[in-house]
Length: 294
Image (cartoon, rainbow, N blue to C red; front, side):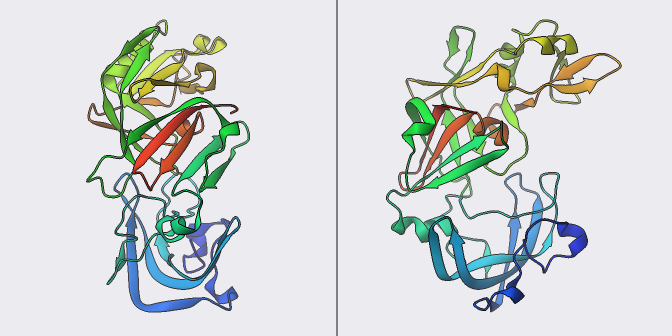
């Protein structure tokens, strides 16, 4: 996001100001139009080159998108996206496409991957570029290949879902989005079985989810357990599943767990903050592991 966006739209969010950089240069005739993972139009603008520093990595004369227009995509002031998709074609710039940030820096890293560790307790997190921090997860990392022909999105296959001690080997695809909304989607068949464990839960069509008496907040919901690959099982602790008030008059509460299609669901912050997630660009795969801390 940038100072080219009207102040009324960008609010107080920190933004890029090309007038304050002695090395900023606009690339004449180059523009972009970007859509968010959900497919809705979000922002557009022009392209600049400048020196970029992220962590200890500094790149001179790097070309990147600078927003002139934006729509809020996640319920707050707009910020921007970071060039971490797996599209080899690069950014959606015209007339020519420019290499995204991660492919541009990949050759300077120890390994062509990055790992994400969000913490729900602090609302903070880290992106580890080029390495996997073994102190941040426990057990094994389960890997699953990125599926082809998904427009550069990180879409992978999950091998199954557990209900109690029974593991149902039935695969489904999920799009993993590090910047998405508070979405924790599973196929309807999976959440039907999950909420069968929650007393007095009923389907709420408007919420596309299950509701239950708010008295149930006195104890944790069941853990969510799913499979990656042939042997690794991952757990989202039930104690980490926030309760949401659906209807105060009827004393009905729910969660952020919603039903997606049987073919593909969306996993965003609510999933990532409960797991250690590896985006292995070089091997076109994703890894999931149980976290040490939340």
